[in-house]
Image (cartoon, rainbow, N blue to C red):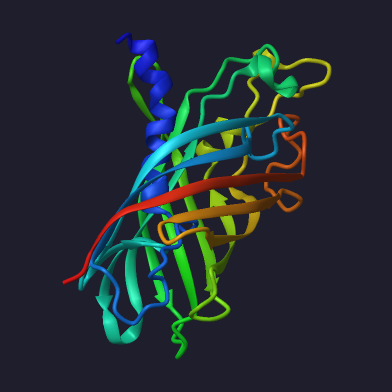
Length: 283
């Protein structure tokens, strides 16, 4: 297998890792049960329509198969709410995983970047602090989180280069209308802040790439975007689930909204998928 082929598989592979670690769309049929399996194993296929970067006009549709694992240990958990470690059970605080990924950007596919170098894939990974709001109902969950990520660009030669830091406070909400309902609804609200290095990766323009329609630009630290998503999961059969989610990204308050590489101040996208549960184990 060539180095280029391996690199082209890199994006889907990292995206799968994030899907497993941040699986809010993977709502298990056991979501509201008092006694839940310690683990579940399954597989699925997901289609994503996403902007090429925050503020881009061009979007790309990708379809990717993926495995998934849900684990519900006493302290370590990886389920509908992502991967996390419960540290103070009575107080509702947990440590979790925060991840982010952006596919390589081909400048020829983005009008605002014409004539500029392509960008490498960007991977972000780090911890998150989660507070679970206490609710008496098993049908509703509400969490407040703060994700912290260090980001690295990954070149086709598999060299890594640090590309800055992101902090992302977020609120997540899940609700099932009743224990018998096949539907579960979920939503997320977040604000992303980044340093100059991260923002320059997307929005910086060096003097040599300045044109009559694209001014040189040094990115500032500050808000990247404000994001919101809303979706639902439905049980089609005992072990087959459909899930879909739409998201909205607002850049009107972005620190770098004056960059000519920001073509849209409002981005939208969607996720659609099917998931099969293959195995579950109770203690």
